[in-house]
Image (cartoon, rainbow, N blue to C red; front, side, top):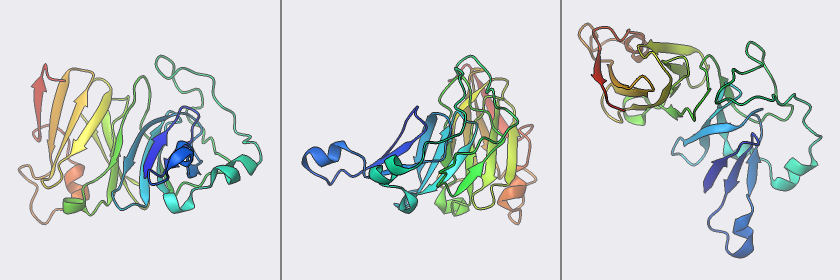
Length: 221
């Protein structure tokens, strides 16, 4: 299975096993974003996807809730206002408002970060150290946002960078996260830094600020 995001705000799911002309058409469509997609990430269980989009939201999806192309075409026209803006140099015109898609099939929505100027990525936290309990994303405000997967509550906002954080990566086994920014730095966040005892929860560790716990490598990108 392959999932693709589009500037038309849809996510399409494709099945490589279909031979001939059938494989040229998606087998399912996920509706819920109101602006173009910037990133997709798979959970690795064959069911759940995480997306980031220019409508300033990240969303959790269950592919079992996707609609067939025929069902999607039969839905009444979406009435939500598509914003006429170029996210590469303009702010999101609906900032502060919750623009809802009338046919939203997403499982959860994560808010608070900013998706502007570049294709900002979002991911599931690693299974080994967190049980994939969290999702996280970079942001145009220069921070890394971490949410609880189920409740969408913000667990942490990691501040340090002065410019856009386009990408970040959580170590699959160690309690470390690395972020890269347009300010020309790569920052390592260490949840097991001095003062973080073994009994500390992942939430408490993630709340720690960069000062004293992050290594800054100037000039790297």
